[in-house]
Image 1 (cartoon, rainbow, N blue to C red):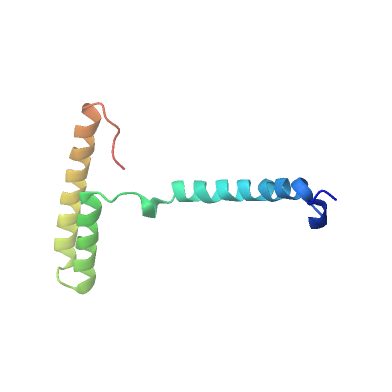
Image 2 (cartoon, rainbow, N blue to C red):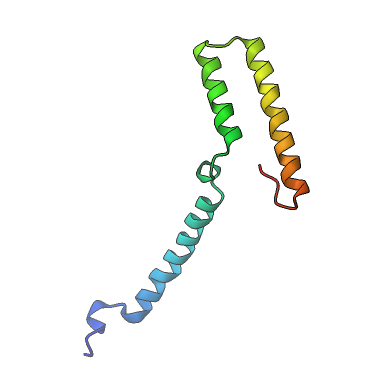
Length: 92
């Protein structure tokens, strides 16, 4: 006996574990990469979240919500155009 055979699998068993662990790790990494909840939040995202929360609590009515929502949309579009004309990647 050379010390490895008493485990029964030898190095072949370690390769088999790697065959399973590597694809599983790759899938987990890909899922984390594409997970939008982990992306950095922008000022527009934060403003929209605050607006939604104020409307849900009843602090503002539907008309004010719509008006402010349109203003955020215009601001977001203008910001995206400004980024696009500078040659950088457009924000989401």
